[in-house]
Each structure stands twice: as structure tokens, then as C-alpha cells.
Image (cartoon, rainbow, N blue to C red; front, side):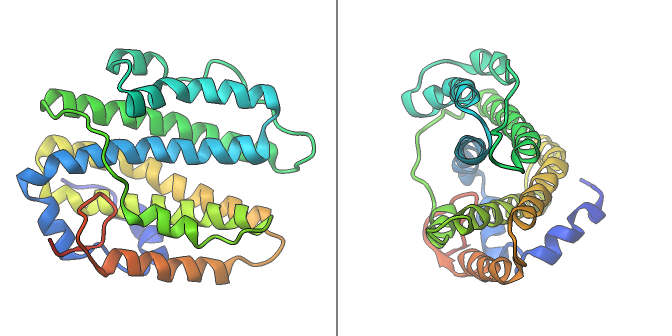
Length: 254
């Protein structure tokens, strides 16, 4: 399966290591497909939740915050309470009302424009993964989270505005790794999944660049040192031995 390799150039420059062969070898095993898709599904929801948290915490007014919660609710009901079905979620993908920014934050409109699009795309991807699972008779199960995103977020500073900037940088790394990993998987999965993963590359690459752009726009100082810090941490999580196989796990050792 071919795709535009230039799309990955900024991703590969940003990440400090590629996906290990040990992880790819494990991911290519047929028995790993259910957990790979189940974790991918949950990752799409978590990506939408992260973007929504940033919107509600920093960018939008109270009424818009309530609209955002209602937008995400059917997906959270499905994932955490096993309520609803794919048809319900497909009808809930689009945001029905405009989001109004806070007047006391100069970057509200920029954050809203980027994060609303990101959420919409992540929820659409959630539905796509769920449909693939349904067609392959892979049941949805509530699985435990990997150490990856949790460890990145745990290393964010605890004071403002640095915690906001750090979370944006973490978002950039998560999206960049997802993009790199989808591309790496293309030659290890069947044609349907390969075509699906290729279709995700452009949006994942844009999500990475949007997060990175927002981090530098909001920061009043250069973000390079924090980018390097999280880059080294992310590289360690990806390249070190890991006994828990998930979409973002490290060098799987069984």
C-alpha cells in the first residue's frame, strides 16, 4: 500500500525513534488484532476528550462548554456504560451548535477552530474503527489503558500557563506517534486495514502540527527545551521493553 512519504517527513524529524520491529512483529499476529482495534477505538475517544478538556478549560464560554459535553456524551455512554450503538454514534458525530470563545483569552478562536475540527475527526474515526470491529465480529471491551499517554501527562508542569503548553506538546507527540505507527502498520495488516490506516495519515499529521503550533503560539518563550524533554520521554516509552501490548506500547517482550 503506497502513500505520500513526504507527509511523514516532519513526523519522522519530530519523533526521536521509530516504532521498534518487536512491536510490529507482535502487531502483525492475527491474535493481536482484537486488542489492536479495541485500543485504537479507545484512543480515538481519549483524543477527543483531551481536545475537549482544553477547549472547556481555556477557550470557550460556559454555555458552549455544556454543548461540548453533550456532543461527547453518546460516545462516552457507549465506551464506559455500553449504551447505544453504531447508528446512534454516526448520527451524533457532528456538533450541532457553534462554540463561542471566552473574551478574556486572546487565543480562544484559534484553539476552537483547531480543536473542534480535531474532535469531529476523532469521533468519525471512532465510528470507523467500531464499524470495522463489527464487520469482523470483534466485540467491544473496556480495556485498561497503557502507560504511554498517562506517563507523558504525569510529567507536565503543574503551574499555568506551562501545564497548558506541556499538554499541547504531549498532544503533538501522541498524534505524531499515531501517524508514524499507522504508516508502519500498513505493510503488516490486510488490505482493508492498510487502506484505512493510510486514510488516517493526513488528519493525524495535521493534528500533530496543530498541537505544536498552538503550544508555541500560547507560550511567551521558546518551547524547544520542553519539546526535547517530552521527545526523550516519549522515545523511552516507545523503545524500552513493555509487557503490555497496546497501540502505543513499547518494545513488546511478552
